[in-house]
Image (cartoon, rainbow, N blue to C red; front, side, top):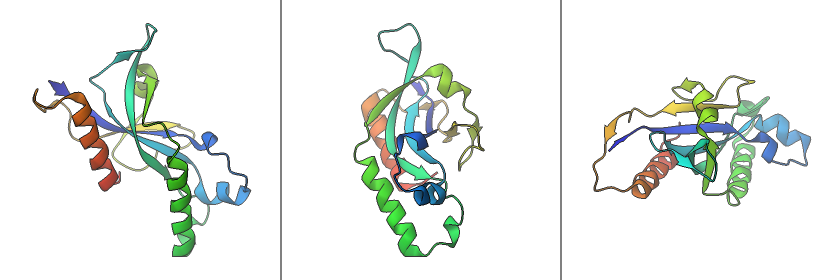
Length: 150
């Protein structure tokens, strides 16, 4: 089976309900990072196909002065996103047309105002064999993305 394994970053800043305007200034945009196999399409009670995206973690761009902050504050910001990630759904579905409209980049974040991107991982047309089922492949990809930030 030929697969096209990618990472997808989606701007989810609006889903983070900061009560502190200072956090918005420091974090900048917050992206959900997902693992996906773009060779697999799903129909969820509708004609429009969707991709199944497996949540990896959230990343923030780092807003104004982020890189000038001391390590303790940066660590607290990381802890904040980890805490927020604990309530995230492990799998989400997005219409293929939305994900296909995102620009493809090598790493990092899309340029504002673009709300998402696809990061090709070099596994295009990888023949992973029939012995590995889709669930195992996605679990391995999620683990890989946890260990190797993009």
